Structures are given as structure tokens and as C-alpha cells.
Length: 145
Image 1 (tube, one colour):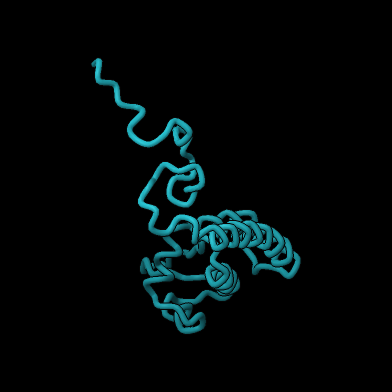
Image 2 (cartoon, rainbow, N blue to C red):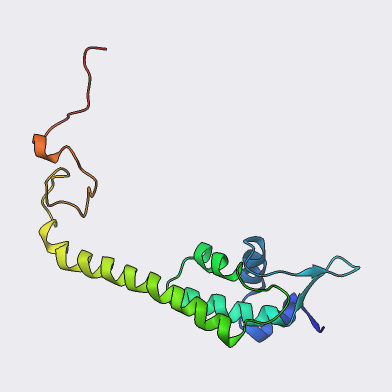
């Protein structure tokens, strides 16, 4: 198997060396160490890097990208079949995010400038407010202690 230096990986992927080091530290890509303790990357890592870049461009968090990559064989390039499976998984995640962002966009005007963090319809600022029905003001303070 052919191995590449970190500089060669950077050049071929268009990434800074620091990004390659960072992704390696996060477990997204893997390297071996040479006898001189230098990083050496197997060529299939270039395909993994391409997948990471596509995922990032789509707004997928690195943790989710890593989770998907962890399901793939580490000793060979990402196959077309694997890509199809992980892109389907990301499609669902993107659809969910689009739905949340669309709801946020549609509700955004209801909360601008209200100044209140405890209105029933103020889910944008205080989404989990269960005390709003009790009216304004503090509810959880205990002055008896």
C-alpha cells in the first residue's frame, strides 16, 4: 500500500496541515508512524477526507461525520455503496435541520423586541418554559430557607 506524508495529503486535499492534524486528533482520519516518528497516511484516507469536506459543506457536525466514518472499514477507500448509505443518513439529518430552521424562520417575527422571556409563544428564547402559564415573575425562589 502506498503511504503519503502529511504534506502530500495537504497538497492533494487542499487542506492546511493543521486541519489534517486536528481531524486526526478527533479520530476522523488515521495515520501510521514511520521509523522516524513521522505521520504516514494510507491513500484511502484521501477519500475519507473528501467525505469529511462534503459533510462539513453540508453543515454536518464533525461528531456526526466521525460516527458515520466509524461504521466504515478503515483499511480501504469509501466505496460507492458506503457513500450511498451514509449520504442517506445525512439526508435525514439535513431534512430535520431544514424543518427546524424553517419553523424558526416562520416564527422569528413573533418574538423580536418583546423583552419577555416567559411568554407562552416565546419558544424561540425559552423553548422549554413550563412556568409561563403561572404569569410573569420568579416562581422557583424559596424565601423560607
